[in-house]
Image (tube, rainbow over all chains, first blue to last red; front, side):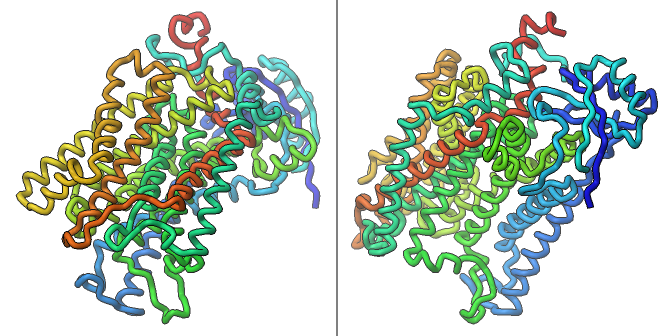
Length: 174
Length: 461
């Protein structure tokens, strides 16, 4: 199943031009497909209506799994599975479990969040996502419209009304 | 974005760079044939790595008896080197995580290299406890897993096991943090490359597109990972210090060890970052990205942490006297005036006296002086670990087992070998990935580029 996307996009030289363009597209009610930039442009998220990422909430739960794995694991091992007395300490020596519990909390949270980030963003080793324009990762800012959502003539007319550098049309695999 | 910038802020990107210039300058080292200066460092690095490999094989073949450890001094250069390398590994996370939380813009010039350095230093560090096990083929016994030994578990009450968890977690988290930061820059290289090179970088760039939502998540991930890495980095050296502090040896059994080790780690880590970056800056022509302002900022951190370390040394001496415990008092007297007096003297000079030169602004901004002082501090911090380990063990409770220790050629070669490993990996890294974070430098350009700050600020706004 090969899905294709028919895209019209404008290239900008500066993040301010891009922000202005996104703002006026919003005002005109044009549906923006996506915005691409060589670095994170602050102020873009509210304009695009992007919700706050929930990665950190996921990270909290991954961390809790780590906490429980470590603490309950050590508890089970040293009280049920194979109790041994070390240095006259009780079997359930809670203070000495704290360092490992902390480390595994951090480890689970970091690994879980990183994997979640790549999975929800559709990224991974060898993944071949479309690159609209190879200069996006260099110094160009790109505002893209999907032809299914916006009339080509409208999109072009709109892009020309902004401080755009170039306008292109391209078919990419979605 | 052009946030209001104070006109007295020093620019962090020089040469009136445009976004495109930044890409060109920073990707260039990965696209051209290596310069002669690179080859001139790479060959000795690989040679040292070869020497270290030979010594490792020798140790595994002949056993720990090929070292000069003895019944009294059973931790020598190996654990000294371990603590030293782990300490060096701390600066990377400090720069990338703690300075990110504090919104210090100067971190962008050096964070990538410092994080890479962290990963390579932790690899060097991990090597020593593993080879010290003697029977390295049983190294996996240190991890708790269901086994056929009964199922006999590891001792979760032991500081040595906490270390296993701390260091493996630290390594993993640093690697994730570093690689995630690297992905947009690998995409930059990918989009300029052709042929096989393009295929390779496409594979490792993970399909990065630069979409707004990806950037948003990427910034979140970096921020939360930084938040996690900050207590982690403090915990790692705290736990390393527990290896000593939870023992009963006078001179080791001290509650000041955790903060003192952490400050020492940051101190030595920054010294190593400076040593490396001053070379990289010269060889790769990065003077406009790693400016004198960066060097001065790092020197200020060195001055602060060096002074903390100095206070810790003196507190240790005071507390040993104040404790009224003669064994503790004697342990410290022995450190300063015993058989290893020269290492104590070296440590005091290099770690306490030398950073005080950085009170002078002129010296903080002097590249040559900084370079030599950074090496001096690296040596001094190695002495510190040697003082703690060897001088303490050489004079234990039983005078009949008092002894002296100096390393065999195998131990020296193993240490040199880790330098080989460290520099080989670092030199390969500067050839395959941008050594300065491209996207992050672009991000700060409009608030820290020299055409936007200082007296030029009004002209360009």
